[in-house]
Amino acid sequence: MSLRSRIAAPDEGGPAREDGHLVAVYRAKLLEEIDLAEMSSLAAAERRVRLERVLGHIISREGPVLSSAERSQLIRRVVDEALGLGVLEPLLADASITEIMVNGPDSIFVERAGRVEQLPLRFASNEQLMQTIERIVSTVNRRVDESNPMVDARLPTGERVNVIIPPLALTGPTLTIRRFPRAYTLPELIGLGSLDEQMLMLLAAFVRARFNLIVSGGTGSGKTTLLNALSGLIPSHERIITIEDSAELQLQQEHVIRLESRPPNVEGKGQITIRDLVRNSLRMRPDRIIVGEVRGGETLDMLQAMSTGHDGSLATVHANSAEDALMRLQTLGSMSEVQIPFEALKDQINSAVDVVVQLARHADGSRKVTEIALLVSHGREQFRIVPVTRFVPRPVGPDRVVHGHFEHLPLPRPIAEKLYVANEPLPPAFGIAEAIDVLNTRQAIG
Image (tube, rainbow, N blue to C red):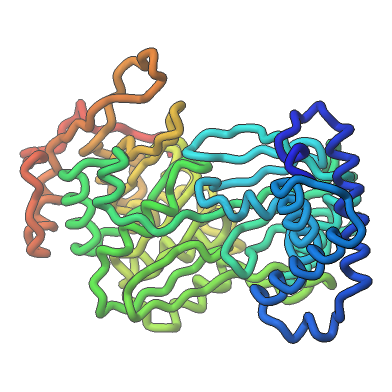
């Protein structure tokens, strides 16, 4: 695909299709002239250099006549098709892109800085998109076809990939590639406006005092980013076990065991679930367990671990508020094959969970901690939470940027005393409430 097809508008199909044909022609010529056995012995970088050199000779010998920019672009596109992912290669090389969404051969969207935009790129054909998808899933020993039309996997380079094809996807093969950003520290998140200095001090005290934390939020709200930052506060001498569907956490401590679930193979066998890993982790003498996301029966095992000697553990859950997070934990815990009364799950949650950190993604793409709430209920009583921090937004102005401030509220005395016993100072912005303020206590129906 030449330079002009890279910048063609989505409705300008002629040039894109023509240049896609040009790429296919020169890719075939390139394959005729190279020694595949020799190529397989070269490193990836050397392989690319060799192909670019051979293709340059072919174009000089056979044409077409191109400008320097068009020639360079054609060489890159042909080599990308031969070695990489074609149209997607420059997108994967762009560090500012956090998500690539392909909705059929003619529709490609990306997310940059929290905003989704459509690109003037397209695949030459439905077949070319399917070839790219098959190349991607083959790197993780998976296959995609009509009998197995959905694939969710992690690439060796760390990106998470989801594929769904017809007949399930009505608009054509759909590909979503999610790239995980580098690990941010809590001070960096302060610079981004996700939280403030006083909240950092409070969260640090909670983690060091071995409070059990649930990080809650919607899709793309920054749960994994915050969880990773919070994990950096765990003392380096502790044994940490991380459990995830797709390995995203990047802990810096020395004593970290990383576990990742495994989907079934093409015969439907060999699946290892998050629940299997949580159960196994309890036999590995962990000081803390970090579950990337609870979404099923493993929630009950995680709650039992939190309340039976594995204090200071962390997990994330999809929910839109602190109350929703607790209700979702109760619902997910009931999905276990263990027949535990729904009411009894309240006891498990009240015993296990200390803090809910709620995140939200705002209209301008920013991600902020909207609330830090403490669970103060006991036994089988209704969930009662006390907010100690909340984000108060101001009306959105002409710049469409979300502004506001963080409001800090007093901590219940039992929580302050627990921090005192752990030798953790109470941040000065909070203070201590003599009794749990009924006005600041919210109940969740459970």
